[in-house]
Length: 215
Image 1 (spheres, rainbow, N blue to C red):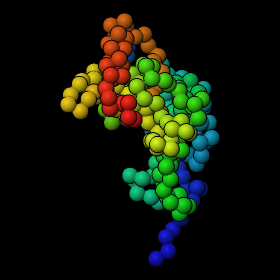
Image 2 (cartoon, rainbow, N blue to C red; image 1 turned 90 degrees about the vertical axis):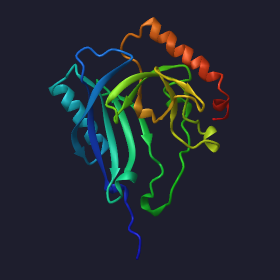
Image 3 (cartoon, one colour; image 1 turned 180 degrees about the horizontal axis):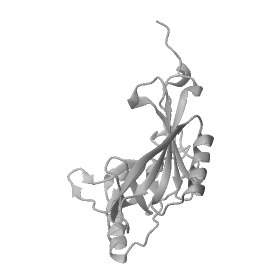
């Protein structure tokens, strides 16, 4: 049987609003929710909807927005082609392209790296980590960034390696997460000195681990 092609026109764009669940959110972590606002035929249409929503009703409970591109006629586990993140004012923040889809019958491809100007954070930066699974935002500290175009020859994942504020050390090293760029945002609230020093201490400890010298 001849294999059907998944054309580029077969994408649908899901617009999601991320909202605060707490009246006074504060670090190190707080609850959020995800509300689907609609489905659109293009990124531009979804971005237009964000601007229209903000113009009509600008809410102090809005944390930000996500636009997820899904390719139709593929299994759910492989359907996400790209994700884009936006700040609460609707401005674009970052993008993740899931480049391992068999689009147009061209086969599977690897992540080809990011230009340095598209790497938002650097090692040692404190960031907000968005978890759709846990429905919360918590602070962490970056210890490894996505590979540049040159580095992608040896490492092909579009991830930041981030250590959470409540990291623990075990036989396998320190707790850390591999997060795509759209899961990270810059801190927007005050970080008290105690918490900041704790994260900086975690970062210094990570640098001593032999494992991360081989990433």
